[in-house]
Image (cartoon, rainbow, N blue to C red; front, side, top):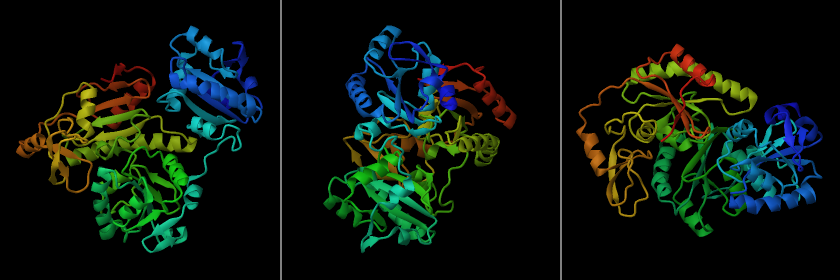
Length: 478
């Protein structure tokens, strides 16, 4: 329990609010559930009595210990709420430990439960679902089924009938799980593009696509799948489909998760990767150490992220800037991989002045840029009187505006006014690259390097060292 004790600190509170040595309190336990909760939270107050009942009836005897990690607003509220609970708690006064745990496990809301094994390694960050679906602990300690094993339980079908996984993977370099549905307008817009790229280049280069349907009934699934030139998961096993979606963290559609030929995860940002490389030149699109904001924000909401804003730099300069960041990105990535954890810091560049970049500039209080042309042609779509889309130039909603959408399948739109401004052009005045570090998990913190700082390897190293040493001025995202 030494690693777990180090993570939690030396002392925990017993149910009578007496201090207990952490190692002794957790000795002999098979698993520990960190229960992030608060009395002011109605869903917490609804879930806590259920969890307490399950804990006392079955889970405690099977080797589970629960540790309450409080988000209460004061110690008095904590004590009143903890008085209803039959397990241990992190002392309320140790707010640093609470913040450290919330950040480490990316706790975005409560109630939330993270289950760790006896060595402090994460079993699941969705412990609430695991326990709720198995309150007697038949599957305790709820270790997730490996994704390869989960997928191979699924039945695959083609237009001609059932297909084995062996047939699916034979001669393939990668597999893209395409989470989509006919009722979803962005899906109906993206599917024809993906089908075109698949038939023209990607299939021949060794990519198989498997449609994972979120359609509302089997007849809709069949109608939609009839338009698609690849394979699909059989519609019948909805529970397995939900497990696969959850295993890959799919929160919205359309979404593409790319796997290698052994069904190991390559990237969850497959839609952006394929859109940027429809010919498959970089297939299977292993993520680069330094990401590009135009291909999505990555884990910027969950992991501290070094951001380099260089939208007005030319391609040669952007390559040199990427080269300055890459050794640090590789170092953080390899260290995290060896520890089986997320990197302490991710790295990303903003190379275009559209999409997310203007929004982030505004959040950081930095000067905005004029609207710039998109890299691909745009085509006029029907007027969107009901909205449902947003302009990547002015960041406004699209209700009632003319919509110009990327003809190459990017998730990119201009309203008519922004397209006119971009077409008028006239060039964009160059701005010096600017380093920033977004630490959204720490309550929306961010840090800026000094204006005009030349972005060199030594400058990046000094900026990171100052961040870790707490020497930078903390600012709050707007």
